[in-house]
Length: 267
Image (cartoon, rainbow, N blue to C red; front, top):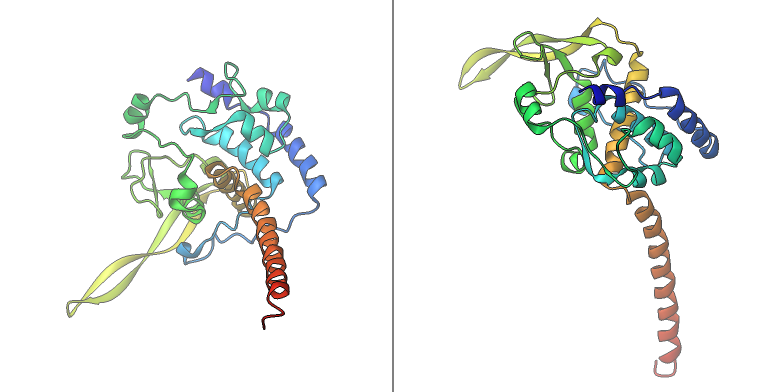
């Protein structure tokens, strides 16, 4: 795992420089939506990511390479495609986002062997190439935000979105450690009143290195990158689709004029 540790020690400042360049080109972005950590209805949380934001995607790539690639791969995405789409210079890509032995034409894979993943976590960590398409960006956003302490679990943590998850809370150093607070709720079941536990809110027990707003932005950027990775051509395809629809509308109008000209003497 020494190679993994060396790989994950990438420079945050280098990619932040690329992000600032992209931000200058794009102009000021709309401020991120206010964090929903204090919302009682956690199931209503939304990622609200913007997959057309190069600035956000660059930060998301940085986040993934620092915190995710040690266990998870993106086996359908090449380093070269990511660098091209996210406007990352090749020298910066090789220096900060790739393992030394990798080629720019390689797919983004993890160095964690499947057998080791099963030994450490009970199951092999999944590839995340299509996770955003399979589960949705809101699901991933809630998953990354709802880890809480649970001494009964092997990892000492659990998750509201995916109960008894094998993955530990790898982002706890950033977002902090939080406990899930429950309340007793009485319900009538088959004519009998029963008392059940219902989630109330999270209580931050150990602060992280980021403020709640900064951590929220961190998660949104990461989700944004996974959304891109699941369909790298979606932004270009949507942009092209607009022109195709406009062309078809103009063509339809011209065809109507032509039909009207041909049939004017008959009608």
